[in-house]
Length: 152
Image (cartoon, rainbow, N blue to C red; front, top):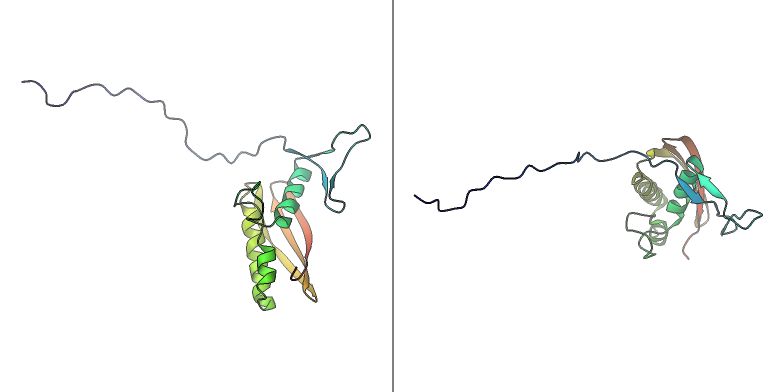
């Protein structure tokens, strides 16, 4: 009796290892940006100075914390912090500090090189706050300080 449904052999499929890759690309390079002057550092020959590995990661941390999330279309929604929104919300200081701690920790945790973020210290001067935190990465532990203005 004929089969109602066709019968055929299923081809063997090569299945790649689907485990997530947490390997850090080596070497990590980026143009060295001077956050004080707002300019990329340039050599005497007119080429950008390169930050490599640990220095490049520190550049990324600073850029990530200082970039307001959702404000620039060039960055994904996973990049940056929500500091301006938090400062504008006019929360009590304890809640503002908690939210700043949360947004910085979230922002830096998206990078697999980040091991932990902590040791936050807040120094208030009027509507401005200086935030100091420790970031442990695959390269070691670094301390970062950022100053955020009040409503602006």
